[in-house]
Length: 252
Image (cartoon, rainbow, N blue to C red):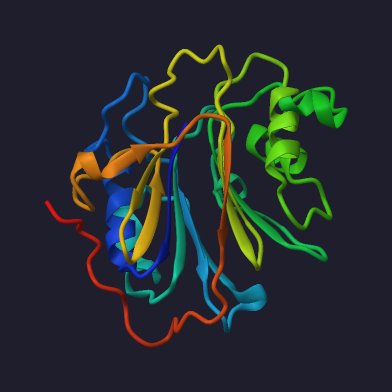
């Protein structure tokens, strides 16, 4: 189980990373799930025009709270940033190979972050057993060669996943668009844990696994509706090497 946050528009990267760190160590936890702390590594993907495909990435197997200061993320100036803090469901799936964002190259490269446990999705790939459910979910929900995630088609694929898992909440990113997938299995035992929330100001949009009071008071956050795929276009004209955005804080 993991925590996700994504921001677009004008914002300070250090604020978004601080929000992810707060979720990772349980300071903002207010849910019905069994997991408050997410110590098994973290990663980020952001818009960076000079990087391959226009996207920069960072991965670290250490807890976010112990290592974010050594990363490039706090000093970024960018119009798009997504961060993933991980709690590995299975002890065997630790290490860099399991640290998000997962990545797939090819004609249309994709980066993928997942919150949930989907141990049955491998059946839809014709596999005898699951090896790493997030990778299998990535390959299933964003088939190789996909250019655009169509909401109707994506929800149809989600609803074909055999019961036995929890959530397919995810952030999927390609060089032109990011997508937030908000979907949870109807029989999950922790529906509030897998909720997602959106903050919209006149400068930016933030979507996160939890309400982050340091970004804005709770009344400024709206729950995302279930069974939802949100497209976030990446702005190729963002002046990512100029100045960082102002603090997000909505009016209190």
